[in-house]
Image (cartoon, rainbow over all chains, first blue to last red; front, side, top):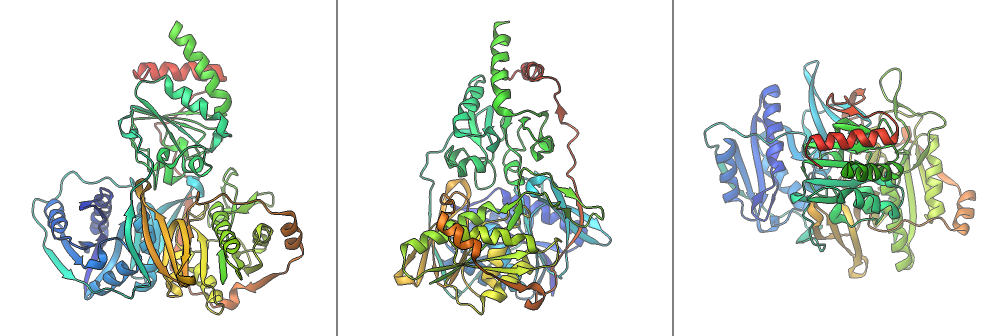
Length: 327
Length: 258
């Protein structure tokens, strides 16, 4: 049995999703610790082009699994295809990103392959000849180190925790494409709907002022909007909690299942900073956070931390700004 | 039709979380504010909406944990669940999603549930695993991060939309029986009605000892807990509100941001 570290690539409309390269970075780091070759697996209706591109860019071997039934991601079909394609490969680790696809696929695949499953991993630590995987709990207030007990492990990686490499070995990996049969159809994915809300230009904003549950009420949203107005090229954003409450539409959501942003300045107003939110904004150049809880996880990724109630602090800040402009 | 809703009791997100003296787990004081995991509230509400739409729907709610979690089961019954099931463990300790899912699957396999619902994740452990694991253990199809569901074909099929990146939705059909994990924001969970609250107060909760369920060994082991390192780059701005505001504006001006 060939021992391998497997990466499951993710793609959308014929393009590899960028976080796949983060999973590859992670797999290469595992490779230096666990000494097994990295193999990238890509599943879809027609993956030859993407498989060759991956092999060329990364220098890694790529296995493509093709079938008409794999046009869209579907947990049942993916589990079936992966289980059968593994054949004589012994995957010590199967790595994927903790995206809507990764978190959907990983646990069930782990049961099927008799593997340990650790999700939303942010770090690796050698631990007495074994590897432990670091992940956040309690909205980022606690970090846990977890060791898999079984021989195989499925790991999902928090987006943004590893950086995609800029350079790879200057060679092309091998590409193999296999046809796979359809599994039992107890689940059938037939389309992907685009977002109905028009997208905001959060990507182009130099400054993003984001609202969290700490703003207290929907009426207080104007504070965040007023604060955004003092900056050029600014936009407002929100934590998932605020979107769930219906205070702002989901197009404003920053973090997992929302947008990933990296503005020059990010001001987090009353956002506690779950790892899901942080993964969407931590590459911002400067982060200012205002939160009443001095232990809020958002402060761990902030350059400037202000322990205050946003609802009373922003009015003072706006008042001082007026004085500042006049001076 | 029978629906099972998995609920978890979590510590309120605003409450401080402290690692215990042995470093093995977190400490929950008697005064810790516990409540239902918000994602599970959305799952329960979705079950209640199915019940309102179709005849002959009963909703059972199940939770795994120490004696304290019974208050969350009762809360679910106050919201409108018919029966409560408590898989009772001795104490607060690290539990893996696989153990919880194995216990619930073991209970559910002898009871015919057409739909099993769970929250997309728990606010404390944030694993996003239990629903998918139950589905696999029971050989049922599963959709996660569900933002819309409709029962079709006279109860044979479930049409589901799941939320994926950038607000897109994957559309799929699942053959019933099936498992769904519900994304927050799918609905607005209700407050308990007075009549349900009175009924729930008197209702019996079926208690099953976890040790009687043949739960398999842990597949993942917790070896350490720590507080995240506060990155050294962070500066706490001190002073009165006015002083803090002035200092912040000074910093932003220096960086040419204003």
